Length: 126
Image 1: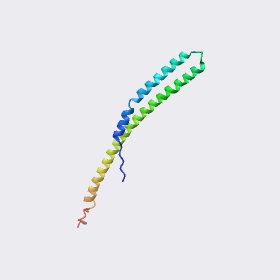
Image 2: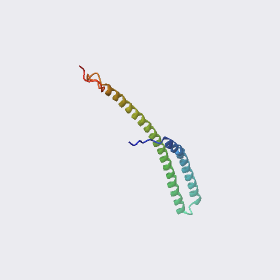
Image 3: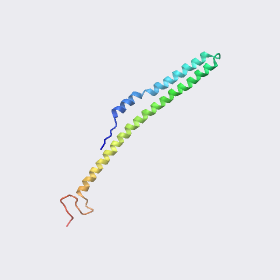
Image 4: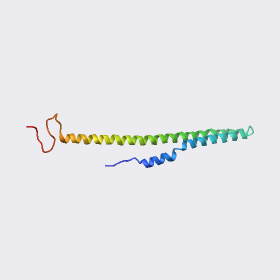
């Protein structure tokens, strides 16, 4: 029987590695937008095609960095959820195994309702 186990240390290190990234990516998006806007204003009306390309660059790259920040934030949330779900699954499995153990003990001893002892050495009541 295969046994699967979640690598909590690996998840924790992955979570720690990317936890600050959304803020850094959003900051980078703001810097890209500001630098591109400054470049657009520096070009002026002499080069309309260059100004249009710089504006397109600003829109694409700033939004891309914002999207990456959202994706990393979602990944962090999913990692937290995975660890929480794994912990809840372990608790549910342990409870189920505990209940099976308790049922197994009852099955060996029998119940008063059926009038029989299920212990191997005992037979039906007289």
